[in-house]
Image (tube, rainbow, N blue to C red; front, side, top):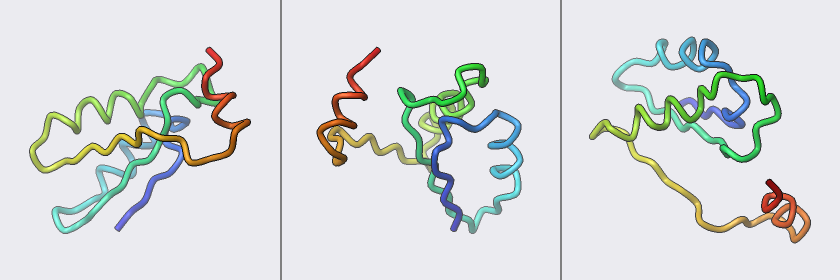
Length: 80
């Protein structure tokens, strides 16, 4: 089981490095938030992989509709 957190900041090559090491018996959770990219110059690897994976019948996408953090973090998320 592999859990990749904060992947919205990962580069494409970094995600590919991890994902290409998985076997068919592996499980992987990819966690990220498209609106919270710290590195604006990255290659949008998170979005590219999520878009690619959601087309597979063996992959599952789970979008959390609610922010469970505090009032200030919810407010900050709303800023463009």
